[in-house]
Length: 115
Image (cartoon, rainbow, N blue to C red; front, side, top):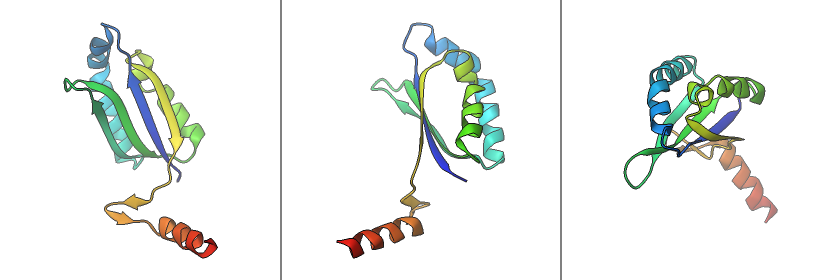
């Protein structure tokens, strides 16, 4: 399955933290279900200088971009307006679980051979 990164920036208006808190339980339940189905490899939040959450980062493994887009559209933080903008991009994994991937090694070997 293709690997994707989701980078979701929080809104910064005065009511944004309350919207995030209001959807947090349903967000966590949904993420836990996705983890259980093997769709989420990593998830976390970027923190601002004051320690407040500013952005969510999810590394996920969906069957295709269409399935991922449907999943993002149903995300509680999207539906209630806690997230301002959501970036989604395919990811090339060079290192996984602390080891260089075979894909990266093949790419580097091809690059070195062409040099």
